[in-house]
Image (cartoon, rainbow, N blue to C red; front, top):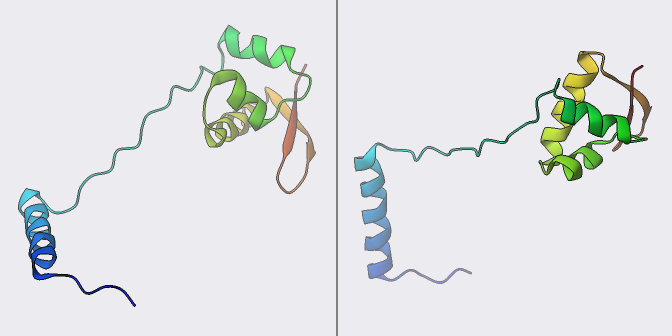
Length: 99
């Protein structure tokens, strides 16, 4: 069972809530912007040419981006018909560069 809060703790908590309301309610969360490499850049195409199997994890390591951003990049490249999916399992997709 949780410990009962003292009067001082309750007052402090209530003061914090009233300060938030006075400032404008909710605090806006900002999501950090990520620098995605340009899909038509020579650097990206050069890296893809060197890779035998293109995976989201491989791209994330090469370009120092999050794996979720690498997945989005690969899906955009697939829609633009730059890469094609070669193999797929429930947790891994392997792509190859289209020639």
